[in-house]
Length: 315
Length: 276
Image (cartoon, rainbow over all chains, first blue to last red; front, top):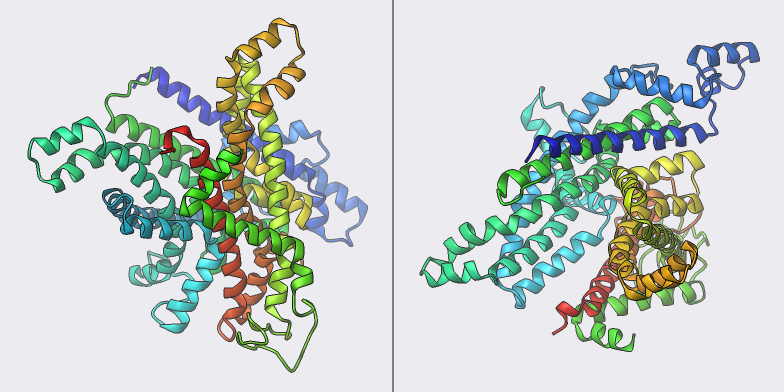
């Protein structure tokens, strides 16, 4: 991997974020809500409205507002929430941290389930086991998070009474309490990903198992276990990395719903609250932060791919 | 096309997919006539009835028959999802083909912009659009259509790149045809099949996304019996009447499974490599 490739890749990230920022800013500009009215209430006098508009810079042309907004973000200033008056960055980044912890748990659980599932399906290709895994993944891929979430809450929180249904305990306060509140959300978010990734692992594994070097390894007299786990799996997992990175986008979307249902104070919940209250600075910051996270995840996946597969020479 | 259909129903997955999707279509067209009860008729003597022979799916907190509500709600859920996907397919096919035809810097600019839009998760994008346009089912359709378009552009472009090198396209260029003619008349008809396959799988996502938006209160509005909305309304009665949530939730999943199976079946049927 060359410095030129890295530079170009970073440039695409910057371009991506610029387009996202334009989209987000443009769309929120179209919002019928007038920020000044939102702040002061419908009974405000025209004079005070005009004063607030001037204070917020709302009387300036749109491109100038965009520029102020963008340069503010570059300096780490995302503006103030229209709902609470709080600093948006101070609101969003701790929330992002909580969401990322949830995402990480979901990714780990997903990989721990999806990879063995995919291998088993590939080894039993065309037989009953393969069909069972295929059916499970079709079901997993087709049940929306809000349905899974309510079903697991019904089952584990109400019927069995093992886990708390909603709420959140900070990890710094009690690791056990935090984990107990994280089990159901993690389970829900990873469900769709397991289905997707296990199918990917299966199809890659089927291709690799049919290749010459795997046959050679078998002929050499290596144990089937060694051939599958050491020779085949490594190459079957490479394309999976890219898929997982693309799935991070889906994961971040799924987290929005799951946080809303399980009442976890993450960035997804913050965004829904912002959307419901038409809190422009919070909406803008939230979308931009999530898009940046996604772009970064894909960048890291590219790096990991190149690092694991030395044959790839990015020019 | 008959060959494709034959290949499609040869696999068990294809058969199940076709069956579920046909069932869904019948529900959409005939649902309101087949429903045994009025979906909005209140009955205070029959509240919270668990599923039985009179009420197959049970009744809700106002005594409304859930089976009837689900049958009538099929229209709201499935038609809206099909509409959103169709719009995305059309937009995606045109932009993708145009991008492939023009090539060079324009192609690069279009594709990088599409990548950038794809960096916003579709649910988030839909939230953003609905929050701008206001909450209603038509706005949710627009939101899903726009969120799905970049993915369609990608698929259409990758196929159109191969079509671009075909002799009939070169011939049209030499004949001096307009860009509009070449893209719409020469190239577009030849990329339809892969776009339809991608679209079919996308319908499954659209059903889930639309239901999710309604669930969050941003799509279909009460008293509609859209399935996502039904699940959302059932949430506060989850522990007293779980069937209120399970029945529409099951229907969403079933329709999504159907379109997933149909899409994968179509892909296999149209892909010469996988045909045995």
